[in-house]
Length: 375
Image 1 (cartoon, rainbow, N blue to C red):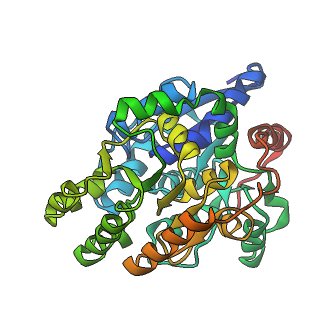
Image 2 (cartoon, rainbow, N blue to C red):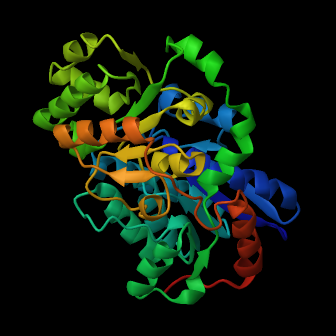
C-alpha cells in the first residue's frame, strides 16, 4: 500500500454529503499522505436526494456505489453490511470515516469494527435521549464502536463522557456541515431560485417535514397540514416534499388538502444550493430536520422544529431554534408569534467557523499511524 493512508469515507443519505464534502477537499491538501476513497451506500438512490448534491458541493462522484436502495431498517442495514464488507476486504484501508446517524453510518461501523479497521465518527455524541428514533440507536452503536469521536458541540462531549468513553477518543472540532455552508454561501442566489420554482417575491416560510413521528400516522400528518393551511392565510409557504412524505400524503388522501391552499408552493426535493438560498432568505423555517436546525442557527433565521426533542440542543440554547412538537394549535401559535416579533435571536456556537474539516484531518494524521482498534 505504500506510505499513504487509505481512508474509506462513507456516505449514504442526503445529509451525509454536506458533512463529507469539506473532508474530501481537505484531504486533497495532503495527497502524498492520504488516499481517500468515497463510498456511497446508495441508501438515498434518486438524483433529487443524492447525486445532484455532489455537483452542488464540488466533490467528485463516488468511487464505489453499493446501490442498496430502500427497504426496512433491517433489510437496508443488512444489504449495506454485506456490500461494505466486500469493499473493505478489497481495499484494506487504515481508517473508515462515517458521518451523521443514518443506517449506513451504523452498518459500516459494525463491519469495520469486526474487521479491526479503525473508525472515525464525524458528528459524534449527539443524543435526543429518545430511543423511538432509529437515528438514536445508530448514534449510540456507532459511538460505542468508533475509535475517534469528532464532536460538534460541548454537550456532545459530555454525553460521550457520561457513557464511559475515554477522553482520549473525543475531539471537539466543530461542524463540517457548517464548513460546507460557509464555503458555499457566496453561491446562494435566492431571486433566481424563487423565479424558477414559482415562489412570489414576498415573505415566505420554508417547510420541510419527513420524520416518521410526523408523517407515518394519518392524524398527525393531517394535523400538520391543517396548521399549514391556517398559516398560509397569513404568509406564503414553500414546501419541497420529501419522497417519504409524498408517499404518505398520497396514501392518506391529503394531497387534495394541499391543492386547496392558494398560498402554498409545493415542489419536488431541491438541490443543496437552492435549499440554502431559500432558507437564508426566508422569514422563518418550519422543519423536523436535524441539519436545518444547525443551518438556520448560523444563518440567523428563526426555526420552529416540529419535534418534542432534539439531538442538537445547542441550536435551542444558543441558536435560533425552538421545539414546538406537532400539535397543530401550538405550531400555529408559535408561528404567529415569530411573524409578530421576528423570532429568536441567537449566536453561532463555538468552533462553527468553517474549519472543522481542517481540525479533523490534523487529528487523523497525528493518530492513525499508531492507532489501535477499540477492544
